Image (cartoon, rainbow, N blue to C red; front, side, top):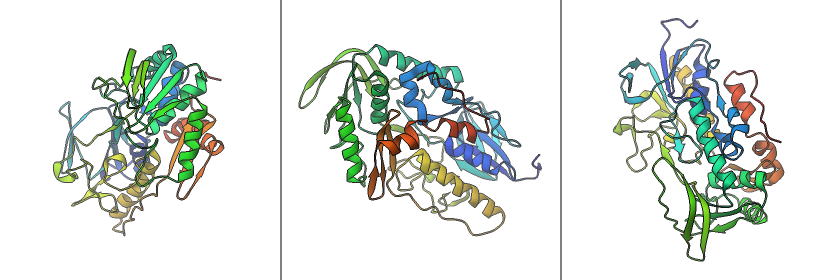
Length: 373
């Protein structure tokens, strides 16, 4: 066991980056990981789970019990973060010598509702959406980001041309990014969407009465667009993510974006013993699970370096890169200056959506098998 005299590291958030930090420091520090959910949610596969339901969602809820050999996991909601301690909503407090903020963001569609924290509740959320998709004959996705596009690919992969799918975005192109990805990437995605029979509407402001915690509207609806009026029986909101920074001091945040201001070493500005990684910091790069894990590796090295009074490593922001599968066999990959097609998108992500990787990273011997062909 780690000595009680070891410095205390508290990690907030049990997603990809938070679990990576906790695991990386487990042998040399007194680690506490705070996560309200009783499983690790494998977001990379969530959109497949929304289409295949209970034949797949059991693979997306990864047990936490084997992650840490020496440290501990505390299930709870963070109320507030103060110098040297974290306050939970149940009134308990945890002191820290080092704090790693990895609370990430919550996509309104792909991730279970904010108040859902149990394995069964998380799976039920995805399973219920899968049932509505199965019943629908025509579906509109609002938003042209990776979530909407990947979900379209999963629907088409299972149902073929059985369902008429529409996509509406307020941007001038699907998968808009600033700076833009390689031109060939957009051509590959557009060509495949057209082949799947998806009708894409760009530069459209679609206003739908979505409820705060419900990104799905069931029942026939008439949608008025600039170029065409369409009638669908299911509307899905694929827009936006909510950054989880409400618990941190305002002095740590960029007032405009609410993201935490960090140095190149990923330390919070003005607070040497606190690190912020992933979606919640103001590093200028495309916010992805992959880049969050790269930042986690730097945070681990820098906390160890601080203890040894050695020079800290600077994180180098990634250039625009994205991998967007369209089902198990389609999609495209954008790399700096060039793009790759369906074969590479399938081999890199689409075929497995990284399920086995997540189970392995959580120290589970092997992932549960899917029940889909």
